[in-house]
Length: 431
Ligand SMILES: NC(=O)c1ccc[n+]([C@@H]2O[C@H](COP(=O)([O-])OP(=O)(O)OC[C@H]3O[C@@H](n4cnc5c(N)ncnc54)[C@H](O)[C@@H]3O)[C@@H](O)[C@H]2O)c1
Image (cartoon, rainbow, N blue to C red; front, side):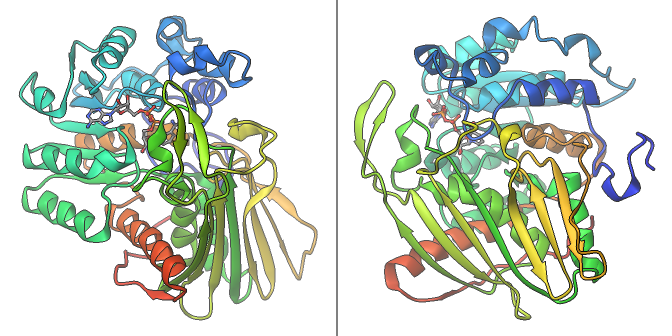
């Protein structure tokens, strides 16, 4: 048993900055890809997400039920002066966690829609707000930038921040191509800065349990894996459907991170991508044309005979809406010659691991406790790294490898060829 009374096979992976009751409350009041931005949620009040999402929006923040159960900062804890750029939907998920993280001092927020920056600065008592990255960088000093802007904007903003001497946490993707991402990483290394990218599925105890199971040999020779994730697609911003967007970097990225973490770097990729819904209606914008894939089937060769498959898209019937806790299926399945392991629920909100072997063929469920993990905490954990010197399991090298898989999947689908990959990352992860 660990110090929290959990079985050692399912221990927490990182010193958490928030106590379990806090994390539990955030889990309960949050949904994942995707929660509508507060103004849009208000416009679609009939959605069942509303009650949950709105608990994390401006008005409700002060009254959040978990507020009184927060861990105080250790005396002498270094707080990292932090700026958040992009005050849309996902900022409602990040800001409550950052606000309560004892390693974070929230200094500024920014958005090219200045009213959004102002609103979040008021809601989360962030002293400064700015209408652009340039204004933010020349304003109140800070050392750590959290980039929550449109997927297509990340690369330029991350570069700008690194050039200005800031550490960076970026929502996915870190950049628009492997080459650009590697340049950013080299820039960071040269300047002794840190660069990280979402997602952090490899930080969950369920991931660690599965990784240990795979490594233990209990499952025999690992042969194949399948993973899936999808929903009906966001309706609050068009960038998800435009060039540089798509369901691969928005959704498949979670499964690709988990599978490469579990089975190792990928040698080559074959994929078929399609657009199922060519026209969508986006809030405040009306009808838009979908130009990037909203449906993806990706085959991965991990070497040594291990093959896996990710299926992902924006046209997936999802009876649970965007609430991850409702998903009880095995969304990641790994099969070996002597056993099977399946992740219960999504990898960004895992609920347990089922496994069986030839010797014990009935599925047994383990690792049902969150163990301190929530998907929204990546940037807070990164701040903890900056303050304490700890390291995350999630690395920029793996994030860039996943980015290369995504661009290779597009090249494969367009050409009908299997695409060899160049990048890699340190594997197995030290779970
Ligand atoms: N919404 C979610 O639940 C969710 C979950 C996980 C990850 N993500 C990721 O988070 C990122 C943002 O998604 P979102 O749903 O919050 O989108 P969003 O459209 O709701 O918010 C993006 C915000 O960034 C701002 N922005 C765009 N370009 C900018 C620039 N150059 N400078 C400053 N601000 C700029 C926009 O004005 C907008 O307010 C994406 O990478 C997405 O994949 C979103």
